Image (tube, rainbow, N blue to C red):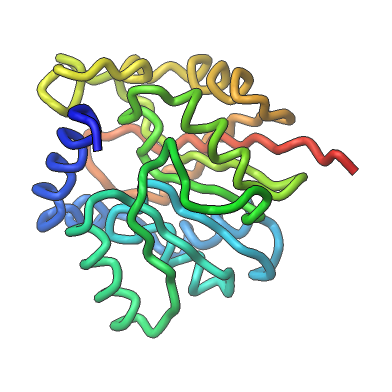
Length: 213
């Protein structure tokens, strides 16, 4: 692991203990509805939650019936996710790895999803290209973001350049385009999905991998 990835991994391992408190304001029923609307396969397919943390998306996708995999390189996050999967009675394959180098074969997933991950990436175009590689033709990349610029470079003490800290929608669309995704959509989700105070609502970005058939 290089110094940059070591710093990022250390940050998220230390954040693991209190991480779930950030999701206590979320309406899980509305989130499940948004997830099924985005993937659109009625639980019949394989999904990957990249930068899954403690499994916020991965667990809901499993509850919807998908073959759910969660990937993160913070082992402390994954340990909590595994405990939550047992307590909720669902099966999620939690895997340790980086968003930029997935340990999966080409064309493995029907959808690759993430929540509040893209702005934390030093090279988001490289990451999304890798997610696209792991998608089946016709599959989707789905990103959920709160559009809020962060001062001081965001996480990691400003020591690592993060291109998406500006939080502009057009920047996310440009990353999707540069990674080769098509049919890109920007969707503002219902405010009722989250009861978080003093926070913007959720914006969903979707893009497809070209079906080469």
